[in-house]
Image 1 (cartoon, rainbow, N blue to C red):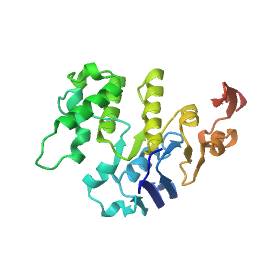
Image 2: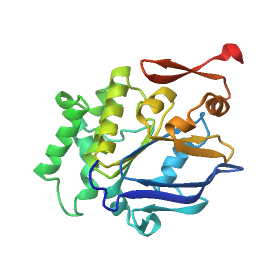
Image 3: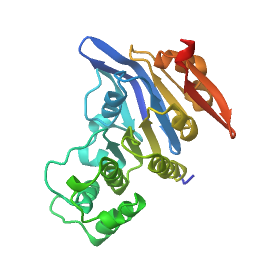
Length: 263
């Protein structure tokens, strides 16, 4: 892992609420460089809302978030975007644009108000498209791409932003098994290089394979955060997903299987 400097991301006392419900109560964490944290839970427990809150795109009911030594609330949106990127669960293409033009949006936090993209910015964007196996599609209109290809464009855009902290909302959404693994390997490499990655995932086994820590959200305010090997157990996952979960060992890996036959 590279020298982390002041690279850290922390939250204290964060409440994530919707009308009439507190989904996450008093969330606390302090992450340093080189950590991959997976967020797990059923639909509707607040995984996306938590990520949007941590990114500063919605207000927490209480608590505060810090990037390094600075409270996020005191930072400009551009300054935040230079350090932190959010990959939303869904993206919309409002205007016609090529894949390269779409990915170039990721460079905007690093470009002055009256400046244009430099050759270096364009080269970074092209390299990230190539990383996502989209180099030959750089001039394609994003509206002509498949769902999986469009998802990879969105990931390339986040990579082009080159932050220190990646917040990823279901990054494997729409992807085939090959690209699911490739994408998670890419972000695992970012972690090894000193980044912080927080990703919501639906696949427990991908979390078990790639995440250093897991955050379990139960949807009623309760949460549990800890090392993956400690937090991912049959009992905890059975409660988390309201269905029996059994573990099996395969090629040195611990895998989890939902087993309704024992319900």
